[in-house]
Image (cartoon, rainbow, N blue to C red; front, side, top):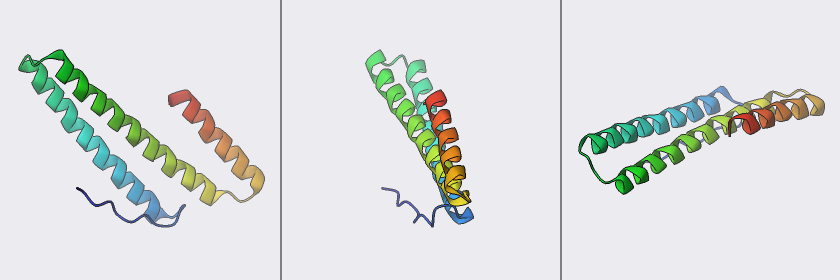
Length: 101
């Protein structure tokens, strides 16, 4: 089991970098899963097994999206200078979530 790096304070550049590294790690795993699916298809394996791996890859992509959006939200919260600005920034992130999730 891979140990996750400790997260730093929200809004810090170090925290952003850690989030970014985590998302990149997840995407590399998805990349491997997709290569595996292609190999399974080339080997003419059963559709059920391929569907299972595609589902796992899709869930991993969803998780990477979640991590990226969580980091973005943390950066916005940490950078807001007023309650109004914070509400505006959160509303923008909510709009993005509704659009892409």
